[in-house]
Length: 195
Image 1 (cartoon, one colour):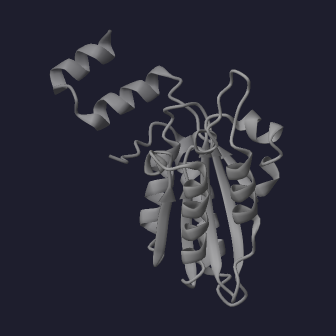
Image 2 (cartoon, helix red, strand yellow):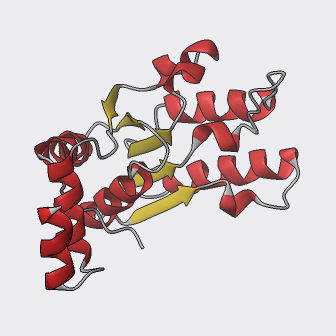
Image 3 (cartoon, helix red, strand yellow):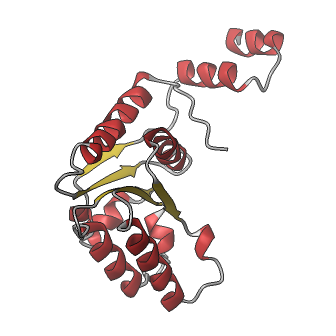
């Protein structure tokens, strides 16, 4: 499930930044454009959930996610073809949104070596930077847990803006999550918070 718990004011700020990108695409339908937003932060901080929620709220006619899970079992060439097809299909709609989830895993990045797929890297760079044809507008939201890697691969400049998504880092935030998830009874919640 892609439930986002607003455990700190920063989560609200992140959604505001994302919504600005959505509004930017909506207002550019006469000329066509691309806006690419990078959500980066520690693993498990909720980047994918935020991207999915923004996609749902946007109500764009075309929304698609490119994820490592959807590429399991595909050859490198087949993954390149799938990525290219998704972007080409997005250009058929007046406004579209594509989520490119967990870039480092899509690239088959392995820190020992290091090793990655240069062909998939080149494909993503071209697709994320390409201006859509025929006055179409496209919002690309990408996620990564390895922001420095994108600098190393000369990919960071593909994005028009980026937002840091923090992990939970305070007791107050933990208490908020405990209350919002309803995983514990009210008595247990009170006991945990009192401790």
